[in-house]
Image 1 (cartoon, helix red, strand yellow):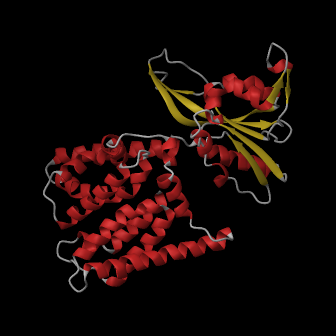
Image 2 (cartoon, rainbow, N blue to C red; image 1 turned 60 degrees about the vertical axis):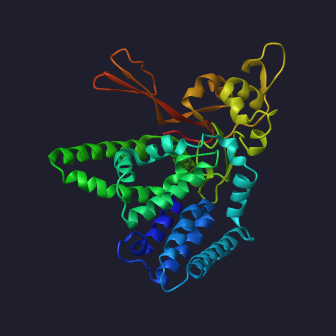
Length: 404
């Protein structure tokens, strides 16, 4: 989504004199063709880019005087866009070793088969009441003010593009904040004039802006440096431990929920190979009402899942002491601190011990001296504020890693 946003922003910049300017209507053809060439690349990354590029192309086509709108759409928009798609297909061929069109697979999975709904659904209006406010943050009042103000040509065009994207994304039952990320630069542009107007009113207006900027920086620091950093940092820690004691293959088991960690995107230490196992939450098990995914089984009863997955127990009384381990212990196990108490005895029997505990997300705040303290809690101001965190726990085989 970040790449999609970056490419769309570059395309928007290339045609901005005609799209956003009050006096210029016609964009130089070379810049427009380059813009939609990038659009083809963007659509190959995520096909949903089309909901921004189609209205942008129609708006630019309607402003042309030297060329018919239909001719502009075909020659300047569609053909360069198709060339961009062809370029990405060739690049994929070089890297994959076979011909592939990934965005068609994404379109088939999410739209034709409707499997996106398996990963959660929201009502039609969710982007308006939750998605956009969460994404723009402190800009929301300025964005609302601009929406109900008089528009010039540039703001009108931006609002049309944004409205088309929001409307079409709202038609899908599966919604996520990141799907609207390409609109964030446009929302910033639309809010800009209102921010300037407030700063020119008086010192109170500037004070409000300063407070809003400070609040934004606090959010940036928290979300960028602390919130959910553990799922990435744990893989970096694994790499550090592997480099200090390399061997041909390492096995890693991720006992966490669906898509909890970037996984192999951070595990690159040739010639070492990684055999990763994570809890299944595939569309096959999600779409079957008679089947419970591994991720759900583990979430509902971690201890029972550990017993069934790693041990073979006999007799009436089932516990680790009378169970025989039937699955080999991995070199590393990654688990959330909230699930550790129920699984600790099984993990100890498997011969893995905690190596690191990495704060991942804030799970609660307690005010006052009576705040609960634990290994995952941080006390501020002499214990007046207690921050409870959910940590990512990394466990390792005692034999394989030398802990320093």
